[in-house]
Length: 406
Ligand code: 7TS
Image (cartoon, rainbow, N blue to C red; front, top):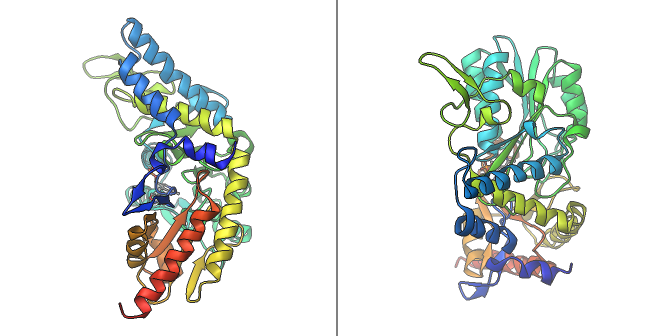
């Protein structure tokens, strides 16, 4: 499929912002949605909107089938062994909180260690801080190399036989670093710890195979991979999930309720309390179909080309610093000397170019980079080199604008 065909599947891209064609370079925050996903949501609400797992009426059965069908699509997408290992959540944040609250609460005690890295998103920091405080466990950080990558020797030095949980992002939302998850998992397991993977920035771009990685848990969000907002996935190995106590309780997740005691449904439903995210899950299933039609390998290769081109072009701008390693996922984080990233984003927006500015929910990483904020352009399968040229023109204009003392 050529790029114009792909772009034509994303109706939102065909518009002007502030009098200029939209250049959307903020897909790491949330991706745009193809028409097939929009239509899947529309069809559900127009034709078979109904609650699931109850009643026997026709619409209810149709909705239940579509919802569970999406679970099977997710299972295949990450190569999990069983659909019992796929839990629908609100997103990555909820999934990691569930692991910390449920697994952490019952498996951590004073003196135990939780190991994360300096590059984590707040969603993979704060749940561990909270459970560490409650259990007396200690939170430890794997340091970063100067270019923002992880040296496996530092993982070996940080993870000890006191470590019970290692939790690392697969792809950094700021640096674009692609982390050696398989090797880190092996080190975690050798020390008797479990491995949690934050796959929020990986699932949209690279093939994840949980059997090959051998990770114990994986979290990701639908909205960053062409799916709707409000839906995400918690994958966990069945043997671990079976022993875990649900964090949320109520309707849907129970087997039998008595006055003072209740029992839970089997996996995965014991972790899905209340009316589930039906439309979201159906939309995520359509997003997976879309990504698989294009092919994750093709998407990754295309994004690498865009990122290389962006780094090459941005490096030519004097006074512009790019953060992160040479080999990176499809995003570029940068600062222009003496210009605040919010000003960069504001000037670009006037030309219809959407980038993100701020701390990107990674304040410990900002501290490590010794900056308070950065600008970030993030790419997806619908972006083009021409859009990167527009970004470069916009950045040169921004620099001139501010150096002339506006
Ligand atoms: N983990 C990583 C690596 C992320 O990039 C994000 C969101 C999350 C977790 C949280 O995902 P959520 O869907 O639960 O919110 N990252 C970003 C970002 O880089 N800009 O906006 C959101």
